[in-house]
Image (cartoon, rainbow, N blue to C red):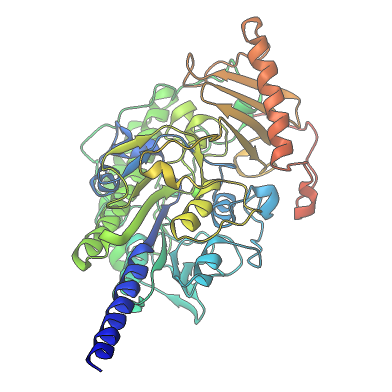
Length: 510
Ligand SMILES: [Ca+2]
């Protein structure tokens, strides 16, 4: 009898050990994404223009990826790629304005099925409602910077406050009150900032007032040695920013108190600007300063708010078993090539920040130069949670890279395809391939090409397409492009997605 008791006690003990063990081996996933945050505006990526101490904590305590590439550098499509692990032509969301088909397989659905509690708060921007999430509350469309209506399963609720802070408050409330402590969680926490038109919060209006932000080397690019699309876009700081972008008008949806603060900050600055009567390069320089300061003010709020969430993870003890990712849907031009916005396969919008912290698994302060992609996020998160990766997903798990391992047969070339033309900012459709050293771009509706030697010309100022010295490289890259298009099953049939057939060789003159 005594022996039976002992056996029972032992069995009970083992059951509790096993259940604790089972809980601990499945980490929580906190996926933090901002919108249009350039890696050139993160101090952990060597920013010359700002400091991001809270975001830097993730890199300092984790790993920084220097070559995280997006497949189609535009907001909604990047979000769809992340959810599905598939290229745009496979998930059906090729350009902003499409509607995401939430019936399809996504990584949150698979994690939910595997017993994860799933939630998304903040920017969503896929038109259809979130699927695969137990809890969700998201901005309607782009959402405003101030006083946002937020949509959830219960309906739409209007909040008063600065959107970056509203999203954080909702996220924190869920962490404190909405979380099921018996389940691991996937928490997707997504900011609207620093998307255009870069409206700073009430406590950030005077940041950078007393400094001059350094200009990028290519602010006055004349696009002389590239194909015609670089000259024919509509995203130049010099000519395509409007009065709202430049804050010559105040936002229209402020409360009286917010408006008073805004006017106190921008009224005197705008009066001084008008008195200066700037023109030519001096005017471009002023526009750059106005733009970049507002952009950085928005990031300052993101940095502070991410800090609040990281602090809570520390205080609650959750940090230890939570993998934290910080990324942006894509990167952004901060005056490089004279531009704002994204879209191009050029480096500034092809690469996006990606820093990951996972205590006990990632060596603090590590870096990785492999070409990973937003195409790989779904596969990696599933792998980390111990869930099988469906064959239909097109990326690969980079989980082993987190602890410093090299993955055999990792991609040595990366395929890119941008579709949104005609459209905002008039960037021609293009696809291309990038290797560690070279980049080939085809503006396929125009029969124009570019080839860059990234080692000799990292700023991509001069295409060497057709140059004698690059014949072999060019032929190899063209062959690789064909191979990748076949491999990823991109046969160009975008009409299936409700997109108008491409306009042939019709370009507006600037
Ligand atoms: Ca974006």
